[in-house]
Image: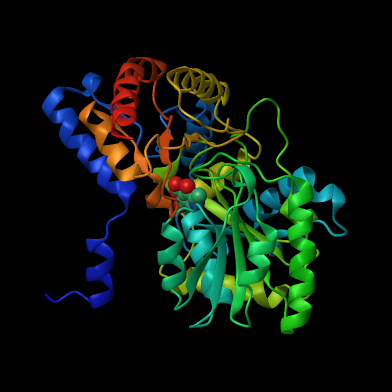
Length: 400
Ligand SMILES: Cc1ncc(COP(=O)(O)O)c(C=O)c1O
């Protein structure tokens, strides 16, 4: 059966993360799982909190009529109200209006949320500006709706480079997409930079005659360390939305549950909400999985024990710095993004692979010269991998 040209190209250029993950499976079969150090994919290994299973089991046991049936495409109203109340408690103190059920739409993960948002606001030919490095699936999400990603240069230590974002704005710009805490760098944007970005977008929107939407992709919001507070984008600019999920902070990526939220201070947002409900339906999601909605409705504010990730981050950063790697200590998410000791990040990732250490080259995030490590692995894997990192580093130094 002939496959479309677009999908033939997309499938041929499989993501570097996926490629590495698949190679890891082969290497583990060959050498044994304890001899392969797989840091390729952000698949949380910390189990979901026990209350997740208890709540899900209780909901199933109650066997309320209709819970497995169709519902409004935006999701169960009660669940959306609970998420809205949580958002008002978490981020509403600086807003004029509270979040309501009409600002929250339950989605099939953060990926589903971004696709619903994009379908609702993008026309063919529109542009989405995103700072490098970035999660490369965004290219597909924009393309799904006939739009394209326009990368912006990173600022210092991978913070926002607002003047570069400004320089990329054209009459085709509909969305600026950011991600904080960030994959792959772990950077959390400060309130100052978000406010500066909001200010710049307000001015740019006036110039092009319509608002530019700021979308923040936030599946790692609750995975931050040292008691850090993640500043709210809603506070920075009225035309904001978030797309998020429970994939990472509840370790539920296979359950495909998340939501999109609209800033309650955004003027005239009801048509946007209606468009999103329709988009959820016609993208084929129809609505987010019912049992997961009902369960997460009861568990607002619950997260996995993030101290596991913090300990791993500290162990890994100390080990890599001792070897001589240059890296910024991430504030959140579960990734490290060290500088490759040689300019060719793919070549360095291959040196690591010869040590059975699997990472992803920075070019897989549109940022050559770096590589990404995911630390969703037990501490022993980190400890046992360090000699391999040291040997690859030493080899790379002889290649300079
Ligand atoms: C930055 C970023 N956005 C979105 C997603 C998609 O998350 P979900 O599983 O909730 O669809 C991921 C998953 O790795 C991610 O890293």
